[in-house]
Length: 286
Image (cartoon, rainbow, N blue to C red):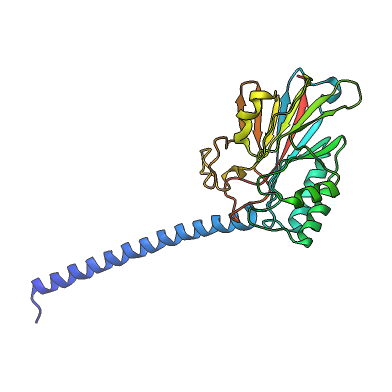
């Protein structure tokens, strides 16, 4: 027959075992919840966040903007990074851009990923995409650091004017123009100019802006390249996959307003807290 002491010991062991099983059960639940949340974010980032772009609208005010350009819409896209996007993705983007009805359309480089060579089929898809984009005044592009000889072929076949360390004087409705300046940030050169018109500078790598404004005046500078870090740490400006000095959406550098587009494609097949974007800038005098 068991003694009272032995019964008490068995009871204590049973209680300890039940408490241990409860703790293990709670731990498993917590780990499961964390795993489900992590996998949900991962799946969203890979299949939704990396694909569906948003339109970011910004009002740009400067009294140097001519009356004829007051209220016009400048739309910027950047960093398609083929093969991160397919034909259906580009069709979706094209519809969003054309719905805006851009006056000026600019592409700030990187049609493809660094080590990716565009196939004939991909070149055809990109040409079809760019040809299908509408603009009222003009369409312009600057080369990115990943682009090769196919960039010139695609842009010219799509009726985009490449600005390779050159300026373009743009007139609209009257005799007072604005100035577009396109910089090749992989082979940067100063642009000789004598005009003091309101200037929009296009560049791929935003970190080159300091060198550019040493010799050229930029009222508005539009860049890409950073992809916003692809994964943004919530409540911060920190991007996981980025090492640029200029990596936020906006900077004021002396008299230059620098805006950085988050790009349409991706290098790591994921976007979290940082959607691919189409940038819309409305130019206004006041």
